Image (cartoon, rainbow, N blue to C red; front, side, top):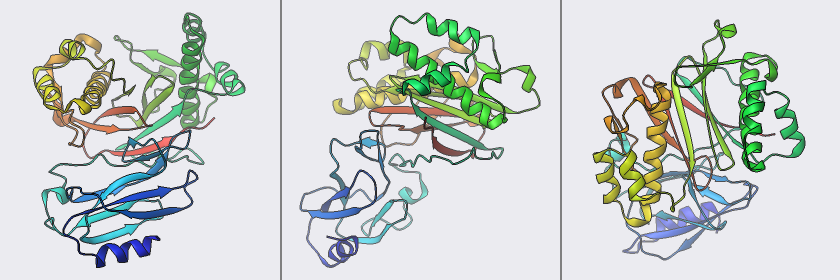
Amino acid sequence: MSLRQWKTFSQKCAPRRPYAAVLKVDVTGHSTELLPSREDYACKGFWSIEPSYCSVGRLVLGGLPCSAINTRFIAHHRISCYQLSRRGRISLRCMECPPKSRLDQGQGPVMNPAIEWEVPSSILSFAASDIHIWRASLDLSAPALARLEATLGHDEKSRAARFVHARDRDHFIAARGILRELLGAYLKQPADQVQFQYGKHGKPRLAVDYSETLLTFNLSHSHGLAACAISNGLELGIDVELIRPEFAGQDIAARYFSEDEMAELRALPIELRADGFFRCWTRKEAYVKARGEGLSIPLDSFSVSLTPGQPDVLRSADSKSWTLRTFAPEPKYIGAVVGHGQNLRFSYLAWRE
């Protein structure tokens, strides 16, 4: 069934129950097909879904992984707005929901926005409120890893040599080399000429040689995936984690989460607790890194929201000075970035070797 046929089908049929559909997209993203399926789901109101793919071609919708190319999404049979944009975004609006509801205003329950990771042909320009978020796989070919290792400074090579396991060492080299390559592109300088200095609590910055530039950055990597945030002078922090259910225990949460966060985590269904745990973990880590004060900031002195599908919320004495944003860089990963200021604009970019 084609997209046009599905639209006609969904508008003409009038069953008493909602419909589901199977979204089929090939791994190259060149064809899209909708197949109707009679299954009962509750009306959710509004979705905006963008298909994207991980390195093995698995489909991702709204940051949630799928085990196969065929992926279910919910569609009510009374559709007043339907479109497929050239970027693959599918928008559905249910006629049962008020036209100007809290959902429309972004004040009610919110689905995590789908992200399209762009591979830019050149480094993009900055506005004062821009934050560029880069993702990169750290599992690189031998020539690419050698190229990046050659750009590292002596201190970075010494740190790399202290890793016991080769995979950890390679991932460190790749992460630092990619950071240097990105910063060098923004600065229009060779990657091996980029110099760093470190704050009291270890937060890296560009060295004083670059005092005329306002470029700021922060880096995180986890289990073969790196995320880097770069801005035009904004204080920022970023964290990315692989969602590991075996790590997301109540005992660990009790050591690092506030009372409000623990209560919200316990309220989640069991199947969502690992997701909620790592949403909380990355949001707290990103905020602490943005502040640049390390663990001198008591982790129970501020709280973040952690329920999947709900808005990103930071509760701290200075929360009005910061913007918190959660993103899913790959299936089974979750990331968070915190930037100083309000009304910030985020761009999502993919590095390729």
